[in-house]
Length: 350
Image (cartoon, rainbow, N blue to C red):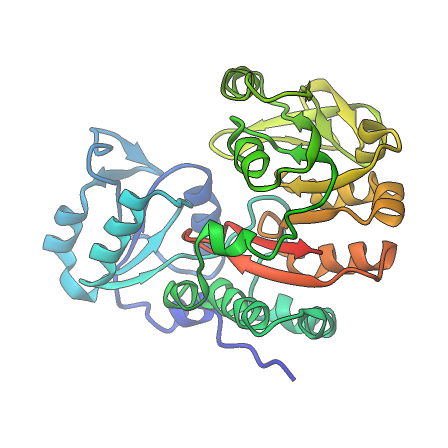
């Protein structure tokens, strides 16, 4: 039986006499402040990365440098990271900060309202244990355990224990599959370029990206790739239109009540019955809807799939259960590539 560590928020409530300082501003900081307020925890300061410290306030608190905060509070302060990054310079800066004082990367959902705390994990313990039991190798199970611990406690050392390079993560994939590569959340073309080089039997590409600026970069970066279709739309569980809401700093997402109507597409509608070799999902919290909209393709083609599982708290158990309900023949793996907090964590279905 899986047991869960005391979550970060419970721990912070026991440290009320210590200064809590935020690293970063924006949507992530808004969400963390909301949880801190709910738990009666005061924010004593806010700092930004070098080069981003300007004469500004956030939530009526002056934004400073780490050095300013450290000079005032010293080793007694607790630092909470309020954004996510996989950039080497940021990860190195985090390492420097965490060597000087207590440092955590709280998990607040990118999308949705379910906080990944002890109560949430206990409520879904059955599903969590089922998914852990489905994982096909020891590294997947270790990664699963470390990601849950990191998300609960905010302790980034758990991420260091399980992270692998992108090349090692992709080594799970058989490289001889023939058919389409469908890139859901193609961004600037980075994954189209990576997998077109890795998997030489792909005979066509569908790149789906809703953002207009990203689409322009995507086309520029992949213009030399043959047989590529570009689709500027949101992936969903139905073809048609939907409302969208723009989240500052966290991309654009579908919503029940948005401020703009956009086109939506499904995997089944995109591939139209063609042989599909591989699908990559990184679609800002719409992964479950995308799976539903690709039900026929998943059942009949059994494409290789790489599905991000960090946008919503429930993704870590809900997504694999949805896939295996459609096609129980998959082998399931989990990998985490360098990122803080526990982002860039994906399930591989082979």
